Image (cartoon, rainbow, N blue to C red; front, side, top):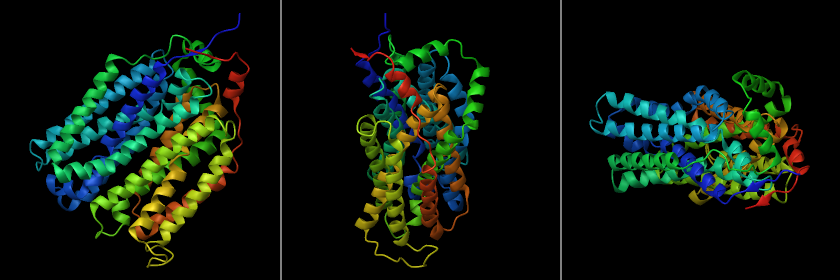
Length: 438
């Protein structure tokens, strides 16, 4: 008798709940950057204010890689997805609540330590919100829905960052810094309790043949096997090319948007700079969800052509943005830069770059199958954070930032041309019976 495969309606609940956690973890991570001009005098950071705000942001990259090793291993264990999500949401809630302690005496020197500890706890939740995206889609969704599921869960953190660019300045301006931090602490606590109450690890019946095979493998997968898988990934030249392109370009985008307050003239309002970050990030996230649908339908097993087109268009709009400001080419803007034009350039650059990450995640899983999804995607996200950390740490002249990012993305475009597509997991699933929708 042929094996049977089913998908359950509750898969959308699981996706929504995990994505909510990922969304809010990213929003908490970005808390202080969009409101730097308010936070610095509120806490009395003085002349070191900009450096401290950058440090609060950089904790996400610093903590990411050490925790990622644990996260990737945890996902290979039985009930790993549930343990990962409960622990991650708990760390996020603990970090957001701990930061509220700094409100007791904000100008005391201990506030820096308290905020840093809160940011570190939330940063530790980062890998747990980012690494499992393909793992979750493979465990709960059929082969015709995996790309869109990965798109939603992987891009919700970007939407969280986008909302953070405008929600923080708005709340602080109309209410106060105190209210803002308390709101984030309460919401983070609610999300943790919600996940703790009900977040099953997997459905009763697997949704696909590859998911069924993964269930059998997980029972015998040891720590030694995990490290063997990681070594095999680093030896896979095709996968490493994807990891470098996806990780480095994503990290470049994250660092670039985080430095808008440096790139844009100080005369511009904090609100306008927030809207730039919002538009760049949100357009990429929404575009990625649409691209996920197309990846499951019209461009099934043809991801590379989309990546080439989108990276080319991104390079064009980044170049236009670069020429709108003083750069290494000219100390004066070469093309006019009215606000609406700058907003449009930033939005389209974000659309064509930010929307590609789910395709990279799914393509990396396809190329490296049957190595667990959490291991391959984990390396991609690690490269993303390392690149972001390096770029944030570089003492870069603001006139070189835009041009540097443009050249960086163009180099990544050239790299995409050398990727060899291979859809091993999909081919395995297509040889088996069609799933039964329940």
